Image (cartoon, rainbow, N blue to C red):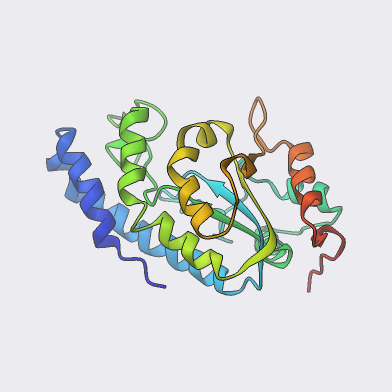
Length: 237
């Protein structure tokens, strides 16, 4: 599957214009387009190596930036988004480094997918998801939701359609963050239902906890609910 940046570009370029930042777009777009292409190549290469998707973790957007921080970039360290120790504790295994972490995720059938195609941040783009800083403006929740809604057909929905081709019969779908679930669940649940990943909106869980990090109790519960019991058959080779 080739994800076309140009169709997503139209959405973000329109938003820049709407926010009075049209003159800033080309500079930011150099970063956005290169990031989009690199991130999605890494994601697709990883997806191709997964035999069956048993757990689908819905994230927000890649951090990326100049250091190219991304869950599937083995050259960068794990972050609070998903530490190696979260996986080690849940499956009672030892993971040596980021590369082995990614491989372990594939082996257990855990796939991470972002809702937004754009790695906006306060250093590389004039708009971002989190804060007003360095001359970069935080998107309002309304603006953010509209950005996601407009890119669904050209990004998230396409990935979910692809994932549906490898989904296990007992696939579990859950959000990394409760706030992302609260904000976007209503936008994406129809796509998840239509592709057979969930039966109803209430099937989508979340694994966040106060203070950051993954709630390992919630995560372990989701893992144990999968009828295939992959937790007992992890192989690292």
